[in-house]
Length: 294
Image 1: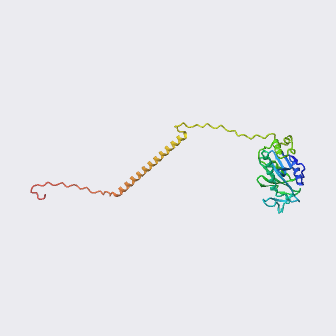
Image 2: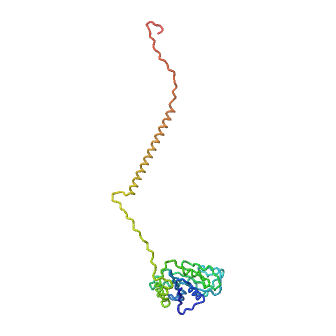
């Protein structure tokens, strides 16, 4: 990684350790150390092909190890002990890095440069041999705390290689343009050095979506039913016929049941016929005059 230090900068021990880490990385990037942005001191501004980040670097007053906790609005702690930074009087590190992000963004926008998304991180550089975990924690989206020194710098390298998930849109010319807007034209490397370091000459073209030709839409002829309308009409007719058949079946069933019930009632009221003996009608006898028995 290309590293340039601002003229007249007085680096602390932690900042010198940090610079050694950056120079040892085979990562494509350019770091400007100890610069001034919008009348504010900024520890480091780092460009990679994928993005721009502002870093606040802090060391420790003494050798401290433990579990790092960074509660909002409260002092940072290592296990149960308060974190003792080498620049304790400079205020909250998270607030300082946010102010640095705002200053860099404001200068770029003032020069009509598109800064895009600017990330930020607080880099804590412990004494060698001290173990501070976790080596990376997120304060809020876009703002992290990274722990690393020359011996244990893996997490810092991972952050610098992937802090932005966007496409590689920082070209060599765009980096030089941003440096000019920040007043770093004399500090920035040449265009050839940026290209040799791995920055692209031109931004890659965005993948274009091939639009398919829409299918021709056949408008219905006025007065002519469409296929959907025809299906709907026949469906209505079929449903009506089924309804009529159902009503007819109900009527027939009711008539049959009523006729059966009447026959049963008539059969119960008619008395059974009792056969009677047939009688022979009497024929009148002939009577003669003066017959006594006639």
